[in-house]
Length: 307
Image: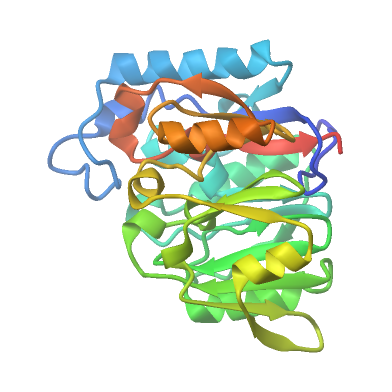
């Protein structure tokens, strides 16, 4: 077992990440099973893997140490051949300084992904902090700071699993922002409606926030997310419907004020507005990667920020 530094809630520069290049599983996607595996279309395998490698190189050129999932899996190698969605590493675990918050995937096509990821994280010396029980649906959260966690009631979370998670995570964090959002695939994960660029700047999609609550050990209070953030010194920049659909909020913050994103994600006026706020973009152009319906953030399990 190795031992690496881990934790991403302190918002420094991204230093370590884990990716998975699905060489063996991706060719198993066909027109008949692509919906089962949640792919929007059958991928061009060679081009998909080429773009995945280009993204890995981009991270490395930015000084990020990239661990390959397959190099840390020994007991469950057979699952690497059966799970093409393992490429979307961020969906399966969020890494806090207390340990990994594992998901329990809601789709049968993604069943058992957490087994592989748990083994790899254990090999890296990262313990599991939280893992839902069998039969629960829970696909992640956002760590907004060392005191605040964001949880969205997406189509891939069950209400009971969220309730149990909130009760548990309040042992380690001071507060949870919990949002009821529309149950549509376009809002499949929390980072499809909210994401941080700096400690004082985030983007969000206002129509997705149907009801929002601040939850602590003592209270549960209905809040207006924009007003609450403003009171805590955070500006929320709204995204358009088109931007949200094209992963406008699902990007990888390399460091505060520097984000890696698809170059199709944001409209020019939003880019200009964010650049005026001092934000710098590292754009990546996707073609074959779009077949899987995920963003660069989905592909990236961020392991450590040196905050």
